[in-house]
Image (cartoon, rainbow, N blue to C red):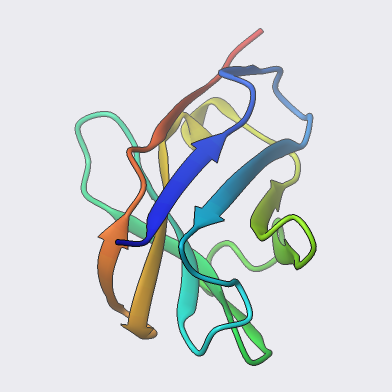
Length: 118
């Protein structure tokens, strides 16, 4: 069973870059899957941020593309998210997920809480 583990700072100051890491176990980030970042703000629904495809290529939500950057570290088998110019509206639980389709994610990490506040 593939396992995903998110990690990163729980608290980020406004205007700083939010950086998160997803460590993948029992699969490779170069496998032909979509490795996505998804978030859920408090009291709101899930929001897809973007994904990187194991065989190459990235895609982002049009509303977040100017601030989001997803990449991978193949030797460490990790997928990273950098989210610039953080605001309190970016406060959310952030999940990484693996999917066979660009919006079809069958395996999720447990999520990591990020609070953007001074």
